[in-house]
Amino acid sequence: MQTMRSAVDGCRSNASHSGELINTLSSSALQELASMEVPLSYPANSVVFSEKEPAGGIYIVLEGEVKLSINSSEGKRLNLSIARQGEILGLVSALTGSAYEMTAETLYPCKIAPINRRNFLNFLMRHPDAYPMLFQDLSRQYSVACEQLRTVGLSNSAPEKVARLLLEWSERGQCTESGTRFRFSLTHEEIGEFIGVSRETVTRVLSTFKHRRLVTCQGSMLTIPNRIALQDYAHC
Image (tube, rainbow, N blue to C red; front, side):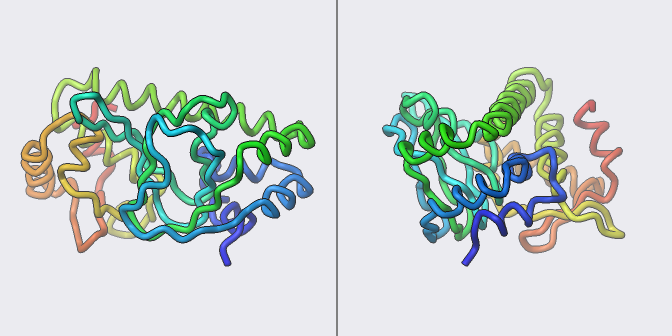
């Protein structure tokens, strides 16, 4: 069974992400946190929690990927980020007691460990060494939100927005002889919801990128042969 410890071990090469931050906890704190886990399996496209739902606690991603999004009263959706192994969902709401500010939905079959809010807050009282980790994670979430606003609101063109998104997702990809390779199985509509453009626009931009050999696709895997060339589109 996948546990907190193995989730952390699987994230050691990604120090800039939330999963690695858990590893900054003391051994005793990690063991106690793991003891509160009751890992659950979620099929693909399952809602873990919904926006405006009362916060019941935090959720730790042990396996799989989870899409985080917000919705408008008119039914429009903006995808914010994709949470991966070791990341903590619902942290702000669990700390403040407010309703969840976003919706979490699995992209693939996932294993996720929910931890009751009261148990989590009691854990923090017993382990003040966890506060620096929480501060770093909240700072990371703020940075992600700022980058999302920059992409959606300040990027001048659809190719720039798509390029920025692909570069961001490829940061945790696998380096191969043919370029940076990562899983990429979102629909064009879902991609558009990350950057505020239509499905048709995403299709057109990706076709252009493929024609110019900025990206290649094989099944659910996408490869960026030359990151510098794609960065020219993203104005990085």
